Every structure is written in C-alpha cells, then in structure tokens.
Image (tube, rainbow, N blue to C red; front, side, top):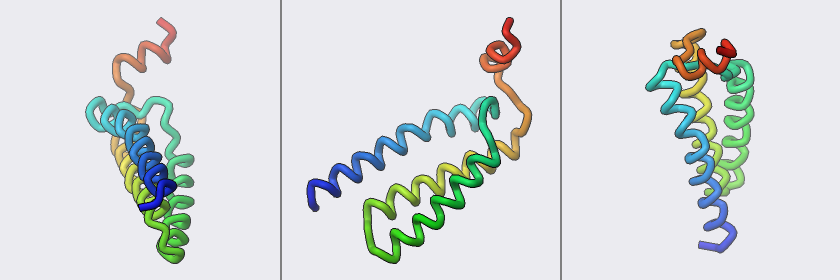
Length: 98
C-alpha cells in the first residue's frame, strides 16, 4: 500500500471519529438540536455521487471515505426524522439561555 493510501485511510478513520459522537448522541439522547436534515440530505446525495465516481475510478480510499459519509449521513437523517424536534436536557438548557 502506498504511503498516500495509508494517509487516506487514516483520514477515513478521522471521518469516522468525527461522525461517531454525533450519531451516538443522536441515538442515545434522541436529541436533534442543531442538526439540519436538509443539509445532511444534500451531503448524503453528494457523497453518493462521489461514491459512484470513486467506484468507477477504482480508488479504494475514496470508496471507503464516501461509503462512511453515505452511511453516517443516512443514519443522521433517518434518526433526525424519527426524533424530529426532540432535544436533550443539556441542549434544551443551552438553547433556552437559562
């Protein structure tokens, strides 16, 4: 594996690390505070198109990161729709200004 691919896969691990806290909080606390369903839907669509391109050019790093983006973004959209309008106590406090 080329050094650039190793760096690409390390970047993919960082993408996963970035999504995990958001997804875990969303599912565990059923908290949709600050999450834009239209924005994540658009990012999912863009990631899906990038994924198709990555498959066509056979770039394993790009396939991996776009797969992560599609799956994570889709989870966020699905759970935001399921828990739409629900906010955890920590975020309720932050938004109320109390």
